[in-house]
Image (cartoon, rainbow, N blue to C red; front, side, top):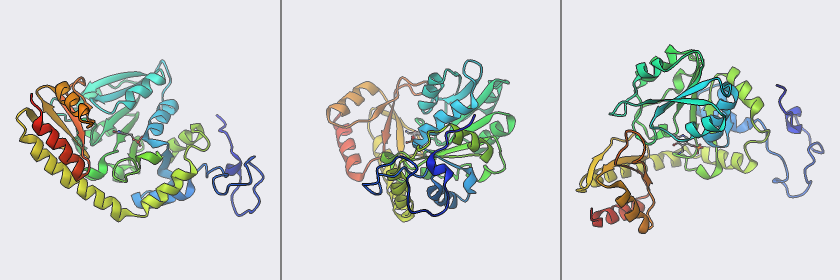
Length: 331
Ligand code: PMP
């Protein structure tokens, strides 16, 4: 297909009079369309991640990247995708939205990845496999060797969603990207960088795939305000690292305190900025907290997560409020 060519796509170099895009000449700088290719921001992110710029695509959150993968790589009604569950809900939503069949392979009962089970579900109509590491909602990282076994064992694209990678002990798969042409990695500014409000997701993949994705995306998919806020945020790596350190400290404190509650059966080891816990009566705990104005996520209806609640690690004060409430909960 021939992509939409915006006024700003056709021009490069220096100019001072812009009468090409039917903008309002007043209200600088918000009157102007943003850079459709987000060149400066991509350069900054590529440098930060140690990748060539051609491997970077930016979306309106990772969610846009997920949807574009379906639209570009899947033939509706014919192809299918594989998700490894339980996992992030948008893979299933995007599959349905795009009329693409989804085959679900369960994690093992200890939440580890079974690469052979995934490989057994693959056939010639598999177009995408979604892995999430660290995984939401189970909070564990998937085993590196198991992920590589899948990537190396298939012809289709394998998406590894690393939204929570900054909270994890392991380095993730970014260093493999240039040698594995069927690997797509998703990361985001929504978690460790504290910028969920600006909506900026990063999709790293081979330039050949990104060329197709770039043709399908909306012309100005990242707003000027987002580009500006992202550049500012990325300038302060120290701040991001401080937040991660604080969140990890809070996570381990919270885990210890949760474990001491009589109705908490298990606190799963977490590699992310949230904890998954198993309790005797999840909906009673969930509602009790909600009535106190504390909102967590009830994941008890999700396969393998019977009795489970997911709790994001907040500030020290927020976590203290949560724990004080949980201490007076009567099962
Ligand atoms: N991937 C995972 C695994 C997530 O849990 C989330 C958000 N909860 C996202 C992606 C969405 O990220 P973004 O805000 O970049 O759309």
